[in-house]
Length: 397
Ligand code: LMR
Image 1 (cartoon, protein in one colour):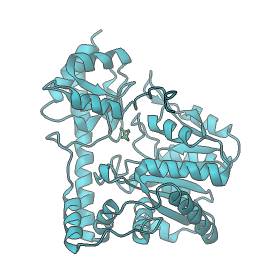
Image 2: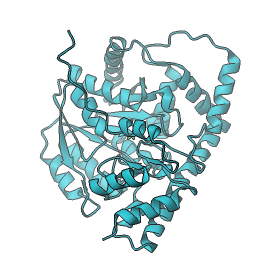
Image 3: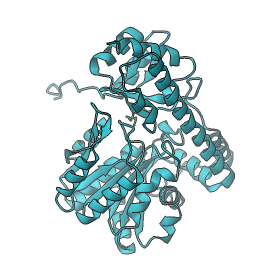
Image 4: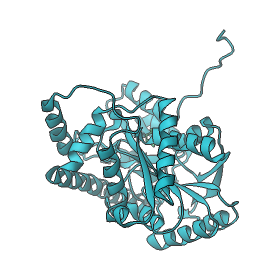
């Protein structure tokens, strides 16, 4: 019955993590998957998360079913986190549901686009997160690209991107990264976002924002600039968000899908559609992670503690960028170290080529995602010199 099933291609990011785990090299360094490690190389349990979870456990709540869409409090908190005061003041109406991580939000959004809007295509940035391709193709959408980043020069292809948007048919779905572009770490400036939103409006396109790293770019509020600017327009749009990274709740699989609609009736109907899709897929979301985040965001003290912990994580990544770039510059690298210094979020698109990546892995057990994405938080005081020396070695002219 199953003999015709061929071996599957391994996931390019998850399989790298597995290979790293199995590598016996004592100095191995994981710069692959988007995981935040602290300065000791540990995945942190954030203090605010720990306190919120303790409180939750003390309440000894039963593990009952949540509503299909998750709790109403969680949905409001997601809206406030993404849109701030603007959410309350806007004339637009948001339908928000809890999802199984940011990936689950993307899949739910993809199903919504297919089943309720009859969309058959989506346009993603070139390059984009490998799993965007898998999720959207898996949902039955044809995935097309728009120009985004030139790996040779390290520059954003901004004009080409605008031209591509201008040529898209009305109603075309474009996937955008509001901050911490994955994989390039190269974001749009506020002026560039305004220009993009202008074209989206003029061409009546349908933006699908994927914000998986809120708080890792310039700040919790600043990273939502594109979302908040788009909310001021009359455009309908989708937003997937994730709590994997910014609350370090990776394994709890917690995210949200918000759809911005023109009227309260439309938002209610869209929420009904999302509930239908959820119910026939996994019925309703898990509750432990969402209850932690609800408790954390509902308490001013915990919320501030969380925001300050997140700010320290962001600062540590920025400092790591500066240190690595300085080490490479001093060592006379041929690599464009300025990219590493200036890009934002967890990742740098280093410009290292496949052969150099393979050398880093074979000779030094240093793992990066092809074609050259480095996850900066994998670096710390114990391995920075080792990695710097290795990169200098593999990039020698
Ligand atoms: C990444 O890009 O490394 C993260 O988003 C983790 C993942 O699921 O791929």
